[in-house]
Image (cartoon, rainbow, N blue to C red):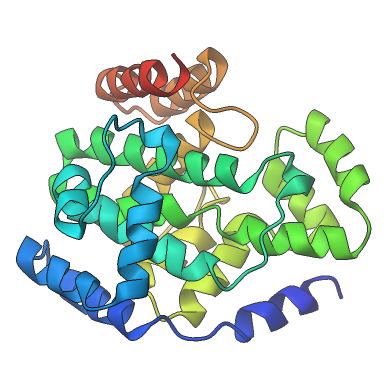
Length: 272
């Protein structure tokens, strides 16, 4: 069956590096002390170099180069740095070719960054603790596309998928047609394999499901669904995608004012 190669690739993932595991333990006790965070990162030269490369990406728009871990953590905050570290640590184990989705690796990184920034800035006003918890999940929720793209390429169905992608609104359904799994389902397996916090995998399992979501993760799943409507591989903070997200909020009796303000602010920043 089509999903067997995907499962094999997930099962073959090596554990996260020791420095990343130590960081996750640090975050499991709440928002960490900056000195402790910087100490763990700088103890790992490869992780340090990787973070500095990531935070100096052009789409962040800093006029001066970030040259130290302390500077990066101060500018980005511990929550965003955690998300960047997890994403980078997972992605380095894959050969990334996202051409079936008509995006580059840089596009993918930018989309993930925008999704995490939107949810962080939105929920910082609503619930700061929840903002810290769900931001890394938002940053990583599209990670399953890497394996799905590989599966589609290996089956020589890239052109057919690209053609269908132009006309399909429900990308998860299209993925399931071609690979019998959606991005969220593959992401859930990756998070489970890497022993990340249960909320990572559980929220992905229910991301495509608008009913029967366990109460404990209902708000997390809903917030991720809203962000995914505003920012996805086909549309990133367009007038149409923001309107779709606002409609979804209204349909579920949520206040739209904060989300709209944050979405429009990020729209000006990224699309100006």
